[in-house]
Amino acid sequence: MSAALIEVAGLSKAFAIRGGLFGAVRGAVQAVEDVSFRLDPGEVFGLAGESGSGKSTIARMILGLVKPTSGAILVEGRDFLAERDGRKRSDAVQMVFQNPGSSLNPRRSIGQSIAVPLEARRVARAEVRRRVAALLEQVQLPASFAERYPYELSGGQKQRAAIARALAVEPKLIVLDEPTSALDVSVQAKIIELLEELRARLGLTYIFISHDLSLMRSFASRVGVLYLGRLIETGPTQALFEAPAHPYTRSLIAAVPVVSEAEERMKPREPLIEGEIPNPADRPRGCAFHPRCAHAFAPCPVENPRPAPIGPGHSANCHLWGPRASDAPAYKNAEETPL
Ligand SMILES: Nc1ncnc2c1ncn2[C@@H]1O[C@H](COP(=O)(O)OP(=O)(O)OP(=O)(O)O)[C@@H](O)[C@H]1O
Ligand SMILES: [Mg+2]
Image (cartoon, rainbow, N blue to C red; front, side, top):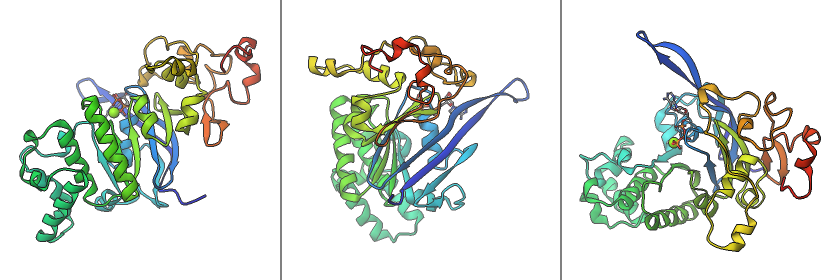
């Protein structure tokens, strides 16, 4: 096995819920629980899941913006959480946010914003100017944009500038948190094209967070699906989309709109998910998905399923695929059912 660029092991985060006059702790939101994955250099790992499933919390822990309750993050084999030097962390990992405005200061020109991480690293002035121009060129913006202000740029141009700023310190890993969801569809495609071109040329690795499964399918090389803070299925993109195993993944994919009848026929036959995603502060016992699952059987409300192997690099945390599978009611094993 080659060295992982990043390895996340048993990562968990519980946020305290405070309330009342004195801000007493009233409970906890288990935003992320026991999440593990490893990425080889050059991969695009897609993190999919509904709103509130813990995607941004995972991103923020990797960036060092949120301290995990437990778990480990290794970057090129080094303990990332023990790294006290924030600059060393940000040299290795950068983030691009949904709203490019958040990484561009409205009172600074684009050039000044891109220069901030370079100046912080004491790069000489003339060299900063040269690097800013080169970075703008890399994201296909004219060098003259260095003088412009964020309000003068379109959404797509701002996102390009934010990408240039993330690239300034030559990171190995970029976490892309919904990088295109605030943009028009036509602009989205161009940004994804740019990100793909940069990845190939600069040897970057991405964690790509999105709730848009069509986009994930075309961009990610591997996908992890989150439900209430837990990874419930992980696999190579093609395998996961063509043969999803977890009923939750199957329902998500069944709900993606398709354009042709051939595509429609290839979709998993799975009912739409009923009910709302539960409150993470009150997570169902056992498999957290069981109250909404059409296939739940005896172990589901009591036992949290461990990852069960589905195929090469593909696993699902679901009792239908684990050691208890033979206890599932007969109809769930019948030929006409997809599972
Ligand atoms: N600072 C915080 N304090 C308390 N709870 C938090 C905090 N940050 C996130 N949470 C909670 O943790 C859970 C996961 O949130 P997170 O933002 O990671 O989800 P997400 O998958 O990124 O959602 P979205 O798709 O809406 O961006 C949610 O229930 C959220 O309310
Ligand atoms: Mg988020």
